[in-house]
Amino acid sequence: MLSFLDSKKHLQSVLSVRAPWCIPAIALAVSVGLAPGKALAQDYPNKPIKFIVSSPAGGVVDIRARRFGVRLAELLKQPIVVDNKPGASTTIGADFVAKSAPDGYTALFGGNTEVVTVPALGMPIKYDPIKDFIPVAQFTLGYPVFVVNAGLGVKTLPELIAWAKARPGQLLCGTSGHGSGQHFACELLARSAKIELRTVPYKGTGPMLLDTAAGQVHICIGFLAEVDKQYIVTGKVIPFGTLAPKRIGRFPDVPTMGEMGYAGFDFMSWTGLFVPAGTPKAIVTRLNAEITKVVREPEYAAWLAETGSEVVTPTPEQFRDFTHAELAKWKKMSDEFGIKADQ
Image 1 (cartoon, rainbow, N blue to C red):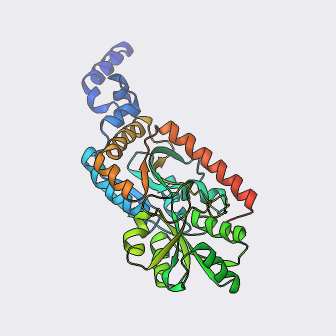
Image 2: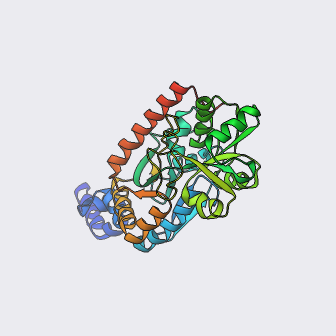
Image 3: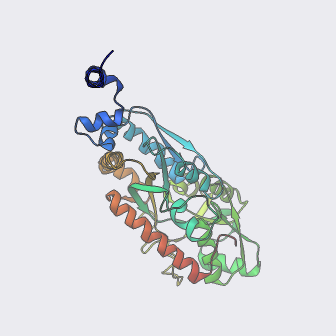
């Protein structure tokens, strides 16, 4: 029978031989001088990454996710799968990501609706826009335009206002859901122009634009990537006001809402990537670096410019501060104008 000391020596001998197979992965990473997060990042990614888009196919975010995902997949050497989860004013997709494993393989490819406007306007949500996500990278920002169905017979904002005042409550303004930026723009237009209108919520921008072009709703806002070639060039809708601090180069004859005497219509919108809280910092840093490479490529930057957007490449920390500031700004506007998601 082995003595206590002999048993201890025997156990140490067994462990020294079996260490590579029996020591847990995290302990092994530490033993070779790597922190757990860095060890994970070195092996990341080793399987497909899923981009959750909280809107249907055809909207500006979906268009960018698919175009962007192709190039990013080449750099990461793993497929990027775009998974559309629309509904509940984009909160279904956002909630799915918030509750996903924090391993870098499920990310929210979204914009200001999910983490800024919907929370700011009081939409009931099951996630915390600040605590449940890590902002990884912001890569675009731009401004939309107000468009009107060509069959309505109006081409300018004054003509639209006159039409609405002659038909109180009949003007229909399409939105991508309650609490969305489009919802806010519709309500702000009604208050600023002193007209009565009704908002019509959709599951996303794609179906909203289809119905605007078909005349099921009369007006909405959209970005060039969504409305230019498919709807404006074909004459199905007419742009009558840009929601930007200056005119958009693609439509130099379309005035800004500010030029026409309506303040508060600078609706900067942006696109970014978010991962669940708890995702290792090393993975966040790796994703930010690869995303920055893609958006700085001349071909991609030129494509974004054609769609009315510009490239931005902040660090994760700068993007975090930006989203927090945007949330505070929209909450303030919501309170000042009295616009809430339940309207």
